[in-house]
Image (cartoon, rainbow, N blue to C red; front, side, top):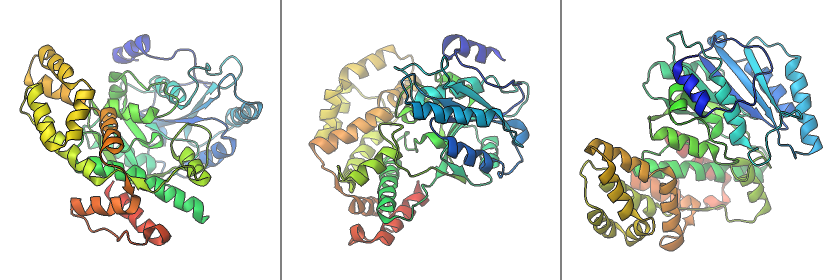
Length: 423
């Protein structure tokens, strides 16, 4: 274990858990898979991994983190025990290990139990598996128990990072569309929502214009350590993890392969795919509303002003922000921009450091807050397909017609297909 890793374990790592099987420092890639109540899916996934391209099997380890909280139901605990028994008795042609965070005495503490902690346990322990003497990059890949991949999943990711200096990336994904029409519409509307947001950020030239889906995340071990590792959030752990990575490295889109996350109802997290499907089927929200594309135009102008290498005073920024849109200047005032900017300029030693701090202050979370602010106070959401059509036209792309899209599932799929191509 090198000094960088030793320091990380001393400062940030979870030390309570360890691998269930013996392990050696012989790998270049570790795939971390948290799982709770996923017995059937784990069986399917382990068999599916067997069918992957074997090119990097010898230097890759798949790590399953079987987890539940102390207060989990008897049914969940029993399912997890079945999963552990299955893994204990299994032999595969690829390398694997697993972590027991489910058995009495190993369960995750109530206050922290969730997907963030489960990912952190696996990603932290992945650092123990790497062969730090080998010259190859050391990659931590994240996915989920209910996903499947194209057969070149490993080779496409590993070879992508052989040809880039970026420290992180997200793999292209598509939710499989179910046969049942209502569920199909739910998935289409949700994936359009995800991709529309990224497309808007791309148009605005935001440094945070990337997908933040846990099952698609990849980073190298240096970047993982530099940001202090995975967080313990019960939801949106992927958003905050990728946002922190974006502050220290470029986030690549890995196009050479695809991950297919399940589009299923789920109780596992408060939001995300599973809860969005639950919500759609319950009919509690209007799922066919998106940010007004004008919001991204305002964001684009602000980013062009703020991320310009010129360094202005706080008053100059606020004055020019007001010229862009009154909602922008109001948001900056409400978020104490003047005080924050004066601290940044006072505490920075060079223009390079000041420009770096711009990215930290107006980060991915503040970008999202700003778009919500415009939505709530100035620019109400508009109908989903019209929003996509208008944004595509602004960007200069040919768009399907939004007329009658609400009633035509084939047309809805055309919108999704266009966004999949672009994001």
